Image (cartoon, rainbow, N blue to C red; front, side, top):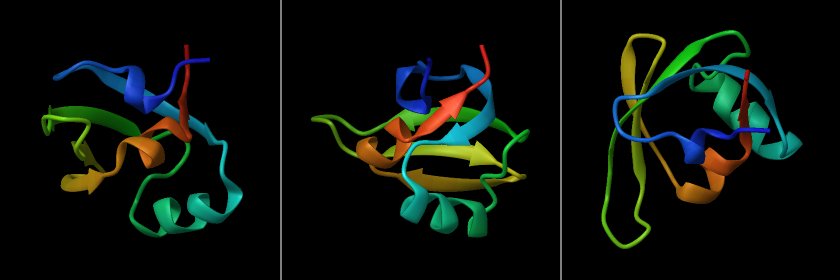
Length: 73
């Protein structure tokens, strides 16, 4: 299964589910809803945060948080 962390800059995906139940509540509150389109804008060097665009706004996530977001194939 592909996760958000697997996408490259400018690639898009559709959120399918979350692997971390506690973190999923936080992500849903920030607009990362299943069925929403999500796009990687840029990544910080040295395994830093990932900047994404979801629900019309920009959001920064840790790499571990991005790995918990599963995408549709």
